[in-house]
Length: 170
Image (cartoon, rainbow, N blue to C red):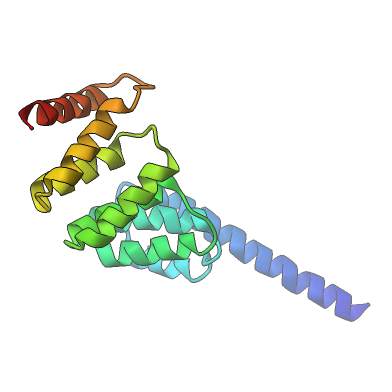
């Protein structure tokens, strides 16, 4: 009986420590100031919490720590995948000038949710401005033009307009 109580007490203590780490992270994530060292400390206790890795990846990206952001994304992707993180992953690679991996990630995100314009537009920009590949640029411009608009926004109209303009020049 004593062993059972001891085990129950240990498990309760671990649950309490984990709950405190989660509360600590929630406080930190809503703070106006991002404390990198504190996040690293919290990470050791929240290693299995995907939402933490997602949050940390975005914060690291905004700090310009692209490689560390990619590490957090890899931890997240070990358990699941997400459109938002796949786009973030592509953006990290873009910032690191790793265009091959950026294209690979933008293509994946484009296929995850085909109605989204962001990955298509980023691919269009990569193909036209960086790779200067007219064939890929034209194909992506056509795909953008053929994608129906689900939610009207200035961004979507601007992307569609730019793709149409490119096709008229060709």
